[in-house]
Length: 372
Image (tube, rainbow, N blue to C red):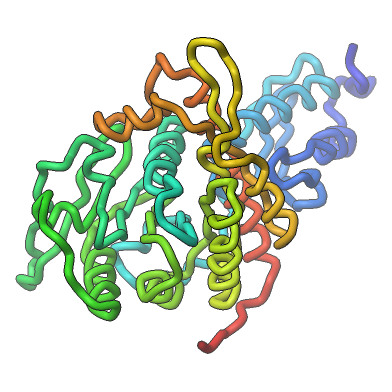
């Protein structure tokens, strides 16, 4: 039964309509459309209603949900109305000067304080999950010592795709697999070639990689960073206005100590933390179903609470996750690994929500200049 009805003369009451739509809560931002000033305008022509919304990007997950809720709100005011919903992206001012990144909307660093926590596996699966959910995604494998993304996407034998601009200078193009555009130092080096270089050279190789790749339009460019807090992390933070960083850890104390240092580094260079993910959180025996907390459990949530950053969720230690990394197909795309795929898609949705919150905050906060 409708909460409101049309007026006696048959016209649709705009005031009631705006009030009803305005109460809808954006599920990622936790605020009403009124509070977000998201209702750009309403057009009412007889029994036709057009609703124009301005929503914080990225919109690949939230647009359909809010479209359905707006239509339901209009039906409650005017059951016979024909409804059209139009959505426009609302985003922070673009600050990228690199011409190859100007069409990239969100730049996300996936980092870890130490190696061996499954950061690259998670970065690859997050990229594939976001693409699966409808976003346009790129993944830049920035680990010059251990580039693993080519293997995780089944491209380990492929060379870098290169071309020339009109002025004769070189330009690179990403490979594409499973809906993800991919660039890596691994496409330049041989599979067994060692990258022997000092810190400044690492940063230089990394800068060349992201400055000379033509990415095209993307909702996300994910940077899979090497572990630690070295030159590449600082170069990225100083040269590119990151939307935020995702920190990957395992539950045990030795990993959590490094998480503190990693988060401190990003905060020092004014990069927001989208959240912490706990990898290898537990192991479920596939035969008996017994759960074993091999590396302890709950440390990621604890450290997130301690440092005042979001906890995005956890991923179990799992054979299908390992197999997906080895066979070139991220586990999130494996129809036979439903539990793992659902867990990663949930993490990707949490990253999307965190990205939208970061963009909203950026639009509300004046730019602050920092010096190191």
